[in-house]
Amino acid sequence: MSDFFDALETREPAVRETALLAALPLQVAHAKLASPAFAEILKDVNPAAVTSRAALAGLPVTRKHELLALQLSSRSRGASVFGGFSTAGFGVNLPRVFASPGPIYEPEGTARDYWRMARAIFAAGFRPGELIHNSFSYHFVPAGSMMETGAHALGCTVFPGGTGQTEQQVQAMAELKPAGYIGTPSFLKIIVEKAADMGVALPSLTKAMFGGEAFPPSLRDWFTKRGIAGYQCYATADMGSIAYETSAREGLVLDEGVILEIVRPGTGDPVAEGEVGEVVVTTLNPIYPLIRFGTGDLSAVLPGNCPSGRTNVRIKGWMGRADQTTKIRGMFVHPGQVNTIAKRFPEITKARLVVTGEMANDQMTLKVETACSGPDSLAVKVMEAIRDVTKLRGQVEVVLPGSLPNDGKVIEDARSYQ
Image (cartoon, rainbow, N blue to C red; front, side, top):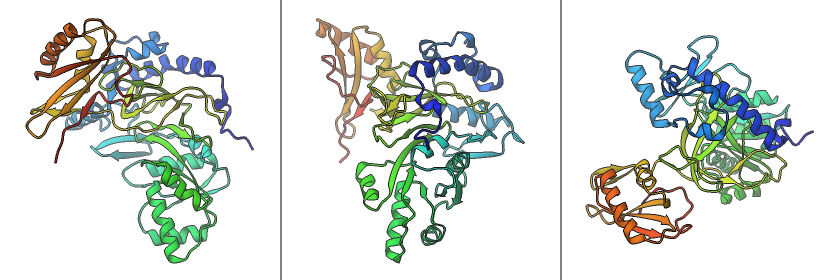
């Protein structure tokens, strides 16, 4: 049996990029025509011209908080619950609707493997004809359905375990003997520990695919010692599958149905390969055609190909949140403001606002990387820009290129709260 879900996973990178960029203008045109929200967001965009990464980077980023605001505004007017982002209304083409905190409502279309999870499930070791114990939630959020539809597309049978009722979960596993588990790692740990307390063996449980939580190496080792090989997937309720772990365990490989960018937090500007930034994704889903959707998650692109033989781009995985908005002296300062300041000075290559102090004694210092020869003059000008953009006074520290950490932080809150 093949080690790959399909031939798409081993395409030459140039072939994949050509295919994605060929699909991109069609998806932009579809979103602009069929989605009222994107008709407004992309009103000044010529879809036929969006045929390159550079052209894509020129489109607006729609972030989660903006999607929520548009949904809330639309619902308050008695209009679309989806804020005009979905291209389908209730009925035969939209069998389910889910809700994430906000609430943000997400549509589920009728396409086989709508959330594109089968590829990730396959990479975690599952194969057609197996039984999967699915302990993701089946109510409100799409996680349960997301995994079930992917498992069905792979040719697996699913036991919809959902969450809670630990003893019943153990009993079902002992009697049904599933090949593996899909859900959060913390809940499987609870199930395995409960089974040990009950004196019940679960020998069939040899693999798992995890999502929804961090999966550190220490927890991976805990499962390995108990004969369970666990792998991560990175998915969201808006986008479905974005990336997944392979047997190589070196980062997460991108799904074949998305176009990924890593941008500087607070902007839509792509960063250099390897630099940490916000994950921005464009999906080719016709029902929910999100164009340049800012997930709010931080990650970075890894160099080279996956040792598993898959040729798509890899990312490091989840590295924190990109929304670093911070309240300083009673006023909110946003990452976008820091980037606005930096862009006023071409000699600045990177900037990081560090907030220190205690309680009502906030101090902020903008550290800027530059190779210019006149740092004192630059510092004075940057201080003026800080005041102009944020309405707050701040200090400036000029540092050499490469001095600031590569962690995606534009604003670092280093205040003492003791």
